[in-house]
Image 1 (tube, rainbow, N blue to C red):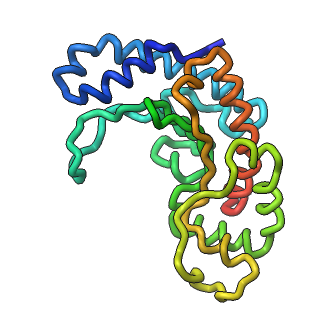
Image 2: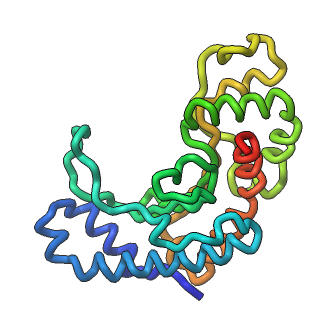
Length: 223
């Protein structure tokens, strides 16, 4: 079974303490090994997810894993490298459209590992469609959020909210608190030690299976 080793996690921990090009270049071999291990894990995870969500089965790790190099052009933080590995697995056909669908996000880094999903600041038409779906079918979303497995792994719905009612909806709408969301997110926090356990792939698949109905609701809104 594919797993993430302590060596990979230690590389990320060391990178967090030495985030500069000289150190990275001197440890390029460690980075390459860790990156390859993460990609093997993601390929195995895609196969696991495909058993309950076949819409992502066409992807490979290279389609989903984010680059470790940071875009610092508009950032005050000029650290050149991300100190985590991340991948977003969705049904989107193109890498450039990876945020246009709700999917499965895995983020691995010292003190910040998590499994998550949903719609992060969905744009224009998608956000409008989600709110419309809530307007007509809020009971389905509330049932998903109240499900035992969802509550076990994710707790409650997360995301930025408007302070007032969104356009086209009255302030006294019965589902106004759901309609105020600008992002619709669910996250499952992980301890550092969770990541290197032998059953981490199985745990990740189980968590994402609990997430699947939530993603389906969000994606169905625009289908």
